[in-house]
Length: 64
Image (cartoon, rainbow, N blue to C red; front, side):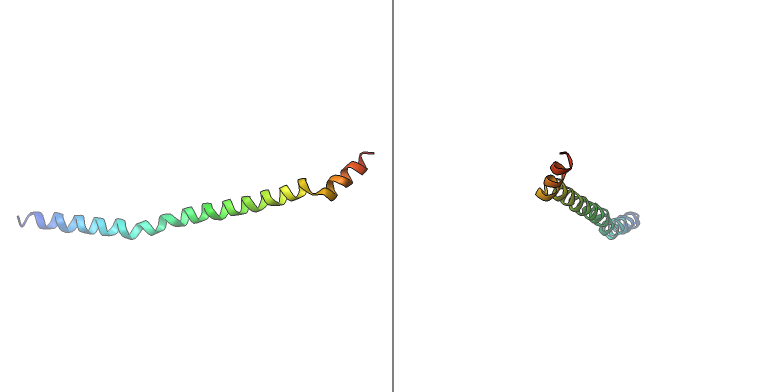
């Protein structure tokens, strides 16, 4: 049994190391969320530009 103790300690340290490293992963997801937010903002600006009635009216008058 005493030969088993170093392995148990090693496993506990390994588990502890993996628990400490886990908080680094959400940073990547927060980066993705930030990029998605920027893309949503761009889409919103493009929608406003395309669906703007004044711009559509100016485009129709320019085509005359």
